[in-house]
Length: 474
Image 1: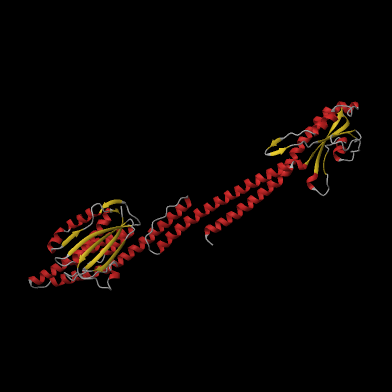
Image 2 (image 1 turned 180 degrees about the vertical axis):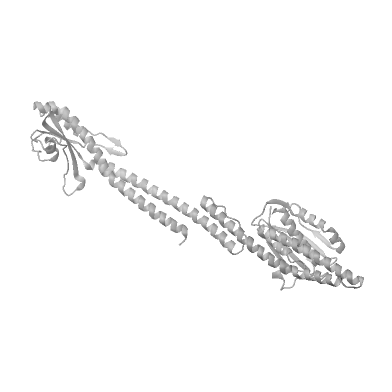
């Protein structure tokens, strides 16, 4: 299972359980919270009525007062109030008053007048000087039929002369409870979904960053060129930089070891030739033969110099992970510049050069490297083109890529050699001298092409050989 999925599942489990626990706890607290608030209001109402009714109860004139008519009119009122989206079209309070013995003197519902309520907790506890309240079901099998009763004492000085109770059905509170629960459920679900989306994005970002690092590490382990991924985040950036530093140190060590072995091997042949010629020159020999050995030493010395210079250039390119500049380069002008630098050699061999690259054709990249690469291709073409032969530069633009092609008239490349042409130190004998080059030119061109996101192809065509270098267009 991918790491990102595992992180998301753990996050999902944590957020889901935490959200469910908090949401269920708050949902369970809504009902008692609303009822507690209502009970507090009933306490205030009962105590207010106790003060209003004191004189009538003390004088025994409660039944003859205007209160029965007022309570009856109160019960018939229709407020038509909109309370937080809930329609309230009737009043719900029931009010009854008892004397000091618990006998009902007044009942807004008219049901219990004259009955003994001294056994009910609201009246019984209040007459004993305690806080009197009860919750009684009107239907013993229906939990929602319960009614909340809160009583307050009616006092004459310190003597309790009666009790007034205010009742409110709990079902009248249910719409507000259900509305609060619905709103809380939607908000809670929305927060959980938002939390999961954030967790998903975080997991995707983290797993994506780790995938970039993994691909980079795989490219490093396979010896492929790869740029350090751009990552955001302190620890991830530090990890990427640590991997890059480790790569640089390991590659540097391996690279030096490889080049030391390679250079040692390649230097053996010219050094042996120079040493052999020097030993022979110590003896007596004809002037012509002596000149031949001196020329041999000079040629091998030049070969050594070319080998070292090209190795240094190749090492510079191979160690780089990207270009130092991305500029638009006039391809026709660059080729003309190279042809001008080789004008003497072209003229002495009587070659016919045709630059068919259109004016305005541009590529994007690092000018120095592209000039070196094209110079190597031209140098190879000159080596294998017979006197009076043809060289032809063309360019083709397709899908944002520019394919630079160099044709040289000459013998076809042997089939066995085609796959190895860009291999380091692999070279074919030059037709004019029979000598081999350093075998680093095409390898250098291939590295430059890779840095530019292009590729190098060499193949036989009718009448000669064609090299194609694919580069990004400007």
